[in-house]
Image 1 (tube, rainbow, N blue to C red):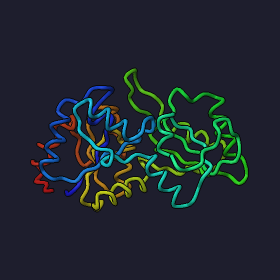
Image 2 (image 1 turned 45 degrees about the horizontal axis):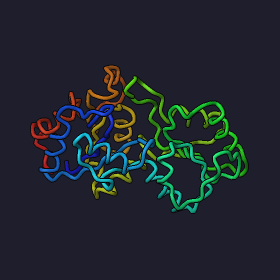
Image 3 (image 1 turned 180 degrees about the vertical axis):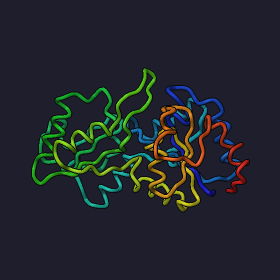
Length: 263
């Protein structure tokens, strides 16, 4: 194997604390010269804030090593000349869309694209209904979901993520969402292009059996599931089969060496 795609939340840290042994595992990956990239569906903060948070936990990652759905979405929008965005993302994430015209936050028509992220507690009926009204105008705007993660583990327990709201709006409007985040194949393909790696030479390591392991499988990438973060025993009973299951990212060096992997 020549490259690794890493999930972040639930793999390297949980809440505001690093997973035990995560820093040492990343140091080992770098010492081995293994190409790697961090993939996250986090849309609640820009890459600079993600890197800063990781740094406070002793996990040294630069912005360029992180691929997020807003970065992928911005490239997609610019390639097609789509403007007049209606953003349903946290305030901090709006900065990632600088340079493209944004609609007023109370607009109910005129969108070129409606973009959904992890708005969290910001979702209420009025907000969801405004997104619905925007999508129902003619011509219909693009519905872009920044990931299709169903839920994640927050410090206070499990929380709904972007998929729940994207599917509700898709069902109501009949518009199929364009997914620019895990588990969508184009997101993994963008990561492989960034690394200059092929799917067959790459592993994805994550805690989400569908978003990480299932998405990687659909892109032809093998997946390693870790028993941290959102992992549940039921994850091992479905039709998605990881290459391996590790207790945590700390076990990666030992597993890699035991299986005779090379960089």
